[in-house]
Length: 152
Image (cartoon, rainbow, N blue to C red; front, side, top):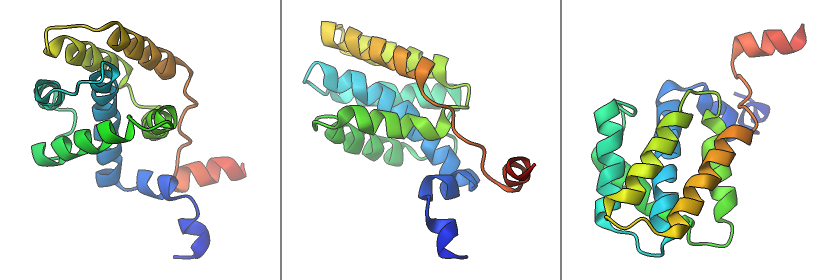
C-alpha cells in the first residue's frame, strides 16, 4: 500500500470490520466513561454497568470484557484531561452514521444511576452527549463504492 493510503488512519480502520467493531465499542464505552468521570468519582460499579449494558444488547460481540474494561479505564483517564471534549468527539465521529445514539444515551443514563447517586454534573454530561449525537458530522463512507461515488 502507498503512503497515501495510510494518511488517514481512521478511514483505513473503518474499512476493517474488526476495527469498526472496536470503534463502536469505544463510542459506547466513552459515553459511560464521560458520565462516570463527571462527578469526579469513577466507581467500579459504573464500569461494570457499561460492560453489562454492552453485553445485554450484544453491541460489541467481538470485544472481550477485559478489553472493554481496559478501554473504560483508559478513556476515563483521558477524560480527566483538559482536552476531554476532543477525546469524546474523536471517539464518536467514526461511528456517527451507525444507529447508536439511543444506546449511547441509555447507557449514559444507566451509568449515572449505577452508583445510586445521580450527580448534577452527570446530568450535564448526559445533556452534552445528547447534543453531540445530534450535531456530530457524519462519518464519510470509505471503500471502493465511496471512491466511485466521489469520482462521479
